[in-house]
Amino acid sequence: MRIAFLSSEVVPFAKTGGLADVAGALPKALRKHNADALVILPLYQQVDRNLLSDTVIEVPIDWRGHTRLTRVFQSDAAGAPAYLIDAPQYFSRSAIYGFSDDHERFAFLGRAALSLVRHLDWQPDIVHTNDWPGGFPTIELRARRRFDPFFEKTRSIFSIHNLAYQGRFDPADLWWMGFDDYRDKNDFLLEGTASALKAGLLSADALSTVSRRYAYEIQTPEQGNGLDWLLRQRRDRLLGITNGVDYDLWNPETDPYIAAPFSAADLTGKQECKLDLLRRFGLPEELNRPIIAIISRLVAQKGYDLIKPLARGILDTGCFFIALGAGAKEYEDFLQSWHDAAPHRVGVYKGYAGEPLAHQIEAGADMFLMPSQYEPCGLNQMYSMRYGTVPIVRATGGLDDTVENFDERRGTGNGFKFREYVPGALLEKIREALYFYARPEAWRAIQLNGMMMDNSWPTVAQKYIDLYLRVLGL
Ligand code: ADP
Ligand code: GLC
Image 1 (cartoon, rainbow, N blue to C red):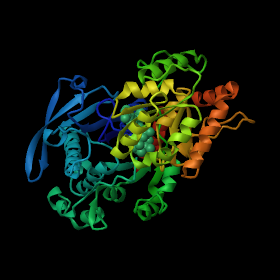
Image 2 (cartoon, helix red, strand yellow; image 1 turned 45 degrees about the vertical axis):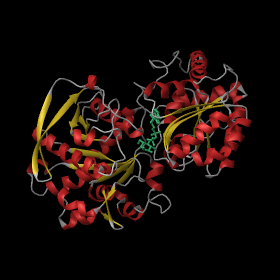
Image 3 (cartoon, rainbow, N blue to C red; image 1 turned 90 degrees about the vertical axis):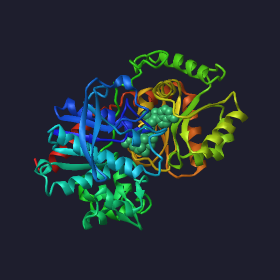
């Protein structure tokens, strides 16, 4: 089976969040199941050129009325063949997203991806796209299938990682993008704008999203972002598959970034990692004081509106707080002022730090906070568990599916979760976690329950293979 996997971010090339982790791990895992998967992404300015091989191909791409020869670079660094589209006018920019022509940039990526597989004469069985940028190639594939025998048998999967990002733009642009056919155009239109997300949701042969709980939530008006009606319409084609963890990269026994290795059998190295983390953030070396950490994009989704009013209450519990995050100025300013007010208790890194610091925080912290307003899957809670760092989460989306409340009597559970999106509920859970932190035997049980979980990708990849087979009618 041939699978072309398209993503706007892929580890180790370019990343802003969890989509990159998934796109770096799933194609590799599919190959372990003997599927012929390749991955296609932009060659951003941010990509480390040392990861690229010397072979460059030139692909003719029809775009805005011209045929352009576009260079495509290759790499094996993701464990599956990766093809990186070199279009400097679109992808040599200071950031990955956030420009007024984003729809044009990712529509071009979609066109380039389909042109590339055609040029390589590599006929895909499945084109698997992700989030709103994937709306363009998905709808284009549907159209091409009608007149181009090369794609006649190709089927599409559209994966939703976050329904809040919709890829909206001025519908007047649809005609020069080549989506001027009545049906195509209509599939983009939403509330007077064009939405690449809606086009993908409507035109894909099957839809998936990154946890079972989120698959349900997005069919409700509360979490449907105005598209719940459409997801309810297509619910027989929508499947929730919870993301996996790439244990090649996230494993405290082999992690090259952390101060000392450790495992469920021997946790001693974790103390060294804690000391290392305190030093990195210039905090006093008080190993008995618990560290609560958070790593996230600084957007409303991640629950900072619950943390803000608790700044004092959290520190009153006696913990350290360490935050790594990039995003909205409002939250960056909050973190800065929290640190300034309590420099010996609050450590802050503002900005995107890359992999090493994220791993060092996972390894050195005692607890990991994810008080998300919504969370399609969430990867950090699963990384945390592997590193013996106990997650405190809100019961939403994938967090609800992967974290189970600790039950002292039965000795079950791998973390702490609260339901109501209010500061008081979060603070109560922090207090509950700290109560058990002070009881080493119970704490060890929670840590081990998390460390023993198997969230590995090969098991998850099999679910995608089953989905592909179903869509292909096999
Ligand atoms: P989301 O995809 O919504 O951002 P996930 O929990 O799925 O949330 O994945 C977030 C990923 O991005 C994790 O690998 C996390 O370590 C990483 N990450 C988030 N913010 C930063 C940052 N500022 N610096 C480094 N890594 C980050
Ligand atoms: C999105 C979601 C996150 C999920 C990630 C990977 O960015 O916000 O919950 O884990 O995609 O699927």
